[in-house]
Image 1 (spheres, rainbow, N blue to C red):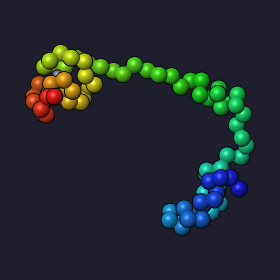
Image 2 (cartoon, helix red, strand yellow; image 1 turned 60 degrees about the horizontal axis):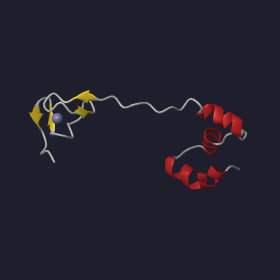
Image 3 (cartoon, rainbow, N blue to C red; image 1 turned 45 degrees about the horizontal axis):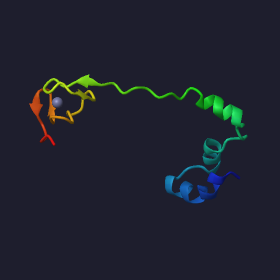
Amino acid sequence: MCVAGIFYDTLCEENSMDKEVFQMSICPKNKSSKGHRDQRRANWKMSAPTLVKCSKCGSLMVPHRVCKNCGSYNKKQIVEAD
Ligand SMILES: [Zn+2]
């Protein structure tokens, strides 16, 4: 039994899940080797966040969020600036 199987009794009761379904869905059959694991993670890359210029103050801000510099959204004052 895998480590997660220790809690399956309580989990199955709470979620009214089938015992076999639970074990099938959560327990990997074999351990992944370090190489297999690292190959999978080799494609995880950092990406630069998308930033746009605020229409009111011109500072860089996350799109579709209130500007952190001036507190405006869609050229309207939404929250008080710091
Ligand atoms: Zn702004």
